[in-house]
Image 1 (cartoon, rainbow, N blue to C red):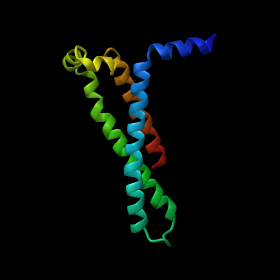
Image 2 (cartoon, rainbow, N blue to C red):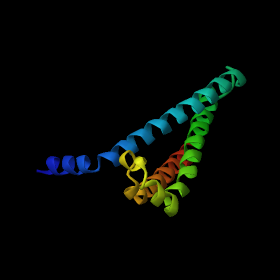
Image 3 (cartoon, helix red, strand yellow):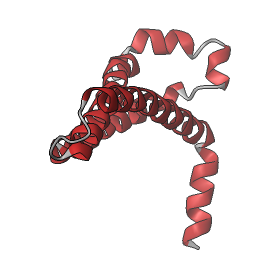
Length: 125
């Protein structure tokens, strides 16, 4: 049925799925690090009796973490289109680990992820 078809597609693209999971965990850890750092600095800098205290503490922390996650994605987007580098790397042992044949899919995924995060931060801001 439907589930078996989707499971077989995911199994056949397991390198790509693993790459997306690793990328997602890196992005979440970068977001968490920078947003927690900004949250701590906002707690120290914003007086507790300020109006809209929690908005002044939480929103900049969210924006700062999201900004750094987007910056990493924007740095990775051009790397997914370096055809000569990808062709050379696909002849090495890295081809067993990373799906170089699917770099266009990675490029598209990064683009959609950047647009999604920019939309969310625009709505929050």
